[in-house]
Image (cartoon, rainbow, N blue to C red; front, side):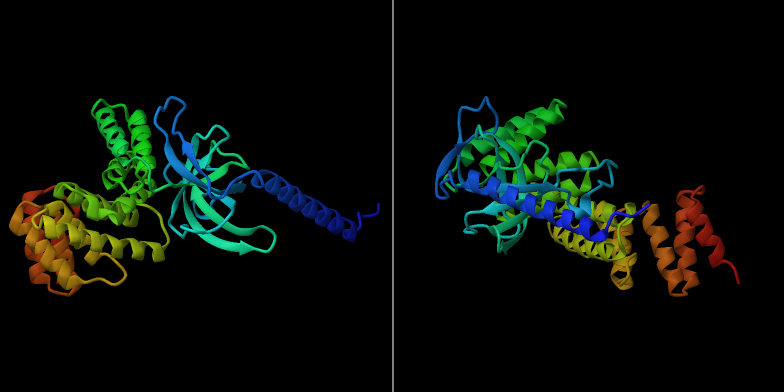
Amino acid sequence: MKSFPCTIIIKIFCFITIFFLIEITIFSDTHMKYDNPNQIIQIFYTQNDYVAWKGIVKGRILSIGVREDTAKQELTRTVQPKTKITARLYNTEGIHKGTTLFIINSSNLIVSRFTVENIFRSQSFGDMLIGYGYFRLSTIGDRVVQRYEGAYPEYAKVHKARGDYYVNTGDYGNAIKEYNEAIILDMYYPEAHLALGKLYYNDNVFPFAFTEFEQAYKNKDRIVDKQDYYELLYLMAKTRYIEAYETSIPEKLKKTYIKEGIQYATEALLINPDAVELLYILGVMYYKNSEPDDVAAKKTFEKIIELEPTHIDAYIALSELYLKHKNKDKASYYSQKAVTLDPANERARFLYRITKEK
């Protein structure tokens, strides 16, 4: 039996590829030639909205695919098939990496919000972008829109207040919807990003949570309440701590998360220097990383004991630190303190036992 000639297979593959590219080009050109790149249009978040906000059409979706680094969510263990788009742009004015853009359908309803990851120029299609987000309701050909600065931030506060109400009543689905609508009306609204991030955080969806916290932090100058700012910094530090020590991530990424966690914890402690839980998080990040700062860790754990003399984990951490530096007397002292507070603590008992070995 003769095998199918390899050259024929290659020719067929090339023909299909060329045909596909031609189809995309025709499809893209057909849609885009009817758009006015400078047109300001009315955009709606839902079909029931009476007040629109203004947006500028910047281009159209060319393809929808899978974001390489989050093809499978660590927490949900489910495949996310629509997490990356490629879009053809009319121009790149006002767009850069990190810019938030929106996808609208033929009825001018917002179906997705995404962040620009990369901007480049293609010989075939001109200006292009790659964006990361969640595009379950998006289709190829949908318009990419940038928020017009003359939108309606005053209405954002109304939606934020509605979101807070839904949180208080336990209706988290509607709360997320209201917070998202507030962000669409005022994408730089830090309290809305913080509130949305807290919902993701409480649901253990830490990558989503940190994305929202980061957006709030970028606009920290707009945060009115000092307590909100402290809470933001605390949650950013705690999120990085959890991701670094309680999830499976590459060592290089873990190192980055620890460094960021130390930064946010240190900044938060400037506001509330006696926050024991945050001090403990900071002490662990000083101590348990690839480039430990044992002196800073020791000072941090000692301060915790001054503030809270019954903090068993701080005694254990100090015992480990002194044992690491071969000071058995100090290690024994702190491990004995931990055992006295909790005789059943296996880690404390183990440390005390080995400090007594000759």
